[in-house]
Amino acid sequence: MPRALILINTEVGAEEEVLDMVRKIEGVQNASLVYGIYDLFVEIEAESIEKLKDVITSKIRKIPKVKSTVTMIVVSTSVKPST
Image 1 (spheres, one colour):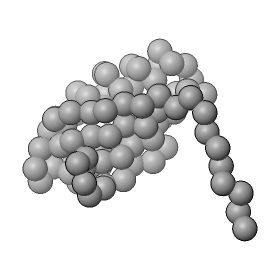
Image 2 (cartoon, one colour; image 1 turned 30 degrees about the vertical axis):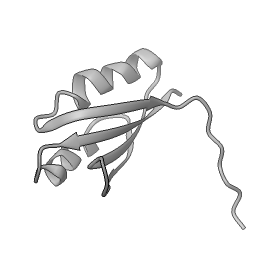
Image 3 (cartoon, one colour; image 1 turned 180 degrees about the horizontal axis):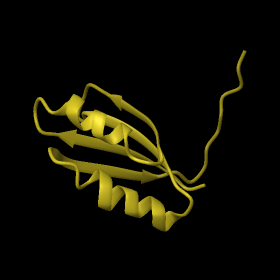
Image 4 (cartoon, one colour; image 1 turned 135 degrees about the vertical axis):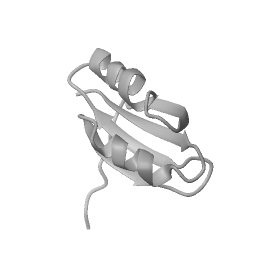
């Protein structure tokens, strides 16, 4: 399944409001508030690359108080073995 990592900037003070809205979107696997240049870190998954793009452009980027996003499409994943 196609996956993407999305970094989101929100309006000042709207971080938790946007986080709550993002968590309700189908396909969101993880959503976290972060400190630094970006306000939220979101992982999404979809059935196809077209569906993935639709979630990003039609749902996440349309959330009120989202100022900007940076999207990274996952090409390969490696899991660190547990010790």
